[in-house]
Amino acid sequence: MVKRRSKDSAKEAVNQGQNAGPAEAAKISPNTPYGYCTERLTPFGGLLALEKFMDAVKFREVFDGLYHPPARAPLSGHYASVYAILVLLFIGFTRVWHFLYIQHDPLVCALFGTSQLPHATTYWRYVVSLGINQGTSLLTVMAALRERVWHLCGLAYPVIHLNMDTTVETLFGNQEGGRKGHNTKHRGKKGYRPVLCFIEETREYLAGKLRKGATMSGEEVAKLIRSLRKYLPACVLRVILRGDGEFISWAAVKAATEEGYVFIFGNKGCKPPFDSTTWYKARKNDVEEYNECWYQPTGWPEKCRFAAMRIPKDKSDKEKGETQLELLQDGGYVYREFATNHSGKPHQAISEYDKRADCENLIGESKREGLSAIPSHRFMSNYAYFQIVMLAYNVWRLFKMLAEHGEAEERKKQHAEQTTAKANGALQGIQDNTIRIARLKLLVIAAKLTGHSNTTEVKYSEHDSRAAGLFTFMAHLDRLRKRARPWLDEKRWQCKHMALLRLQPVSHSP
Image (cartoon, rainbow, N blue to C red; front, side, top):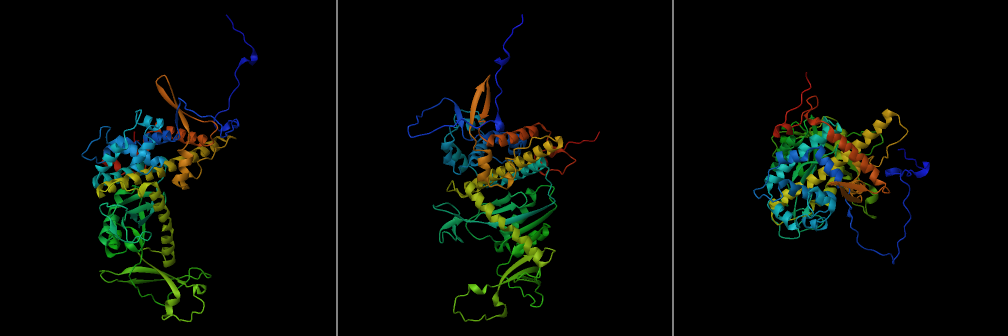
């Protein structure tokens, strides 16, 4: 039997995704009615991409193998507890009690296979049970994730720059370890003085710790410098270490030299005698002059190279009517001095140091992401929470690296196929965006959870222009999830964490 129907009975095609037409105009007024709906809606649609990212880098494997769990085992397990705090920080909530706002979010609950997250006190008790061992093991977890994402992005930096700096976290209670130290904004108040080390090339957090609110000693700095190598990817062959005047000491210089690092430390307290006849200008029209000398500060067993830069004082800054002359001949200059083993000329070494300024921006961003939140009165718990916050910070950094890598791969693919269609470019340059901007592009995208045939599906609005970029990223993550683990390929540089996880490289020999 043949069924016949009119030619025009077929349904018209509907545009989807980025090609969809404009939405129907709506009008909202004070008299607009409102009410509840039965659909499961979430403002954090980008969490699906986070789940795909964690699967692509095998985060559960890294966590279970490298994390040192506390003695107190929660009912949901250590992984679920730490991952829930990571999700909280990833969304942008910085305090443990902020679980109140995502406790019933359908997508967050779906990540953990529950209809409702435990109360915030459950996670607070877990944070209180943490200590220094957990914080230190999280640094190893970050190092393993770094190596895996670098492999996925095809990165292999032979030379990297490490920027070290300290900051102040003001305390407004009776937390353990609080000290009255250098606190420019709240003079006389107690605080912590954490130290952080960042990789300039990728802006990742490499290592650091929460400290009592006192200035770092030379032995502390040396211990930190000696610990950096175990967190570096195996492809790194040369390290340029930069720090301000708080890090200069013979112990720090000795540690950097023995580790084979090129170091540039700001000078504080030393008075090297520079020859007045050897000042030079890097360029003819420059006003800055440079010099160098070998000098042995008091208490140092050996001489060290010091580079200096002097800048003429601006005469317009002097008060009107001032007739006082400079006592010394060199009094009309502002000096910047550095201790270094850099092989270049003084102006090259100082120019290399000046690129360290971005470290302040990274510390400020870390504070906004939760570093300034002090969850407990116990110093050990705050020490571990510090590393969880920095783990969430690094997850965002690696998340953005893969997003931009996926955008670049899409453009390369379209160029190879010589198609007329162009990549939407929504994620181009996202690696340089701050986390707040990246959150608007990849996370805070409205979504709806639907289900049929015992399967949950996440749907996004076709009228949201950001959905197209998110789809491109998730498609890239799906391709990475299907690939064999590139960090096990013996033809590439070998990851350090493979031995810790007892993984063997994959041989391609017949």
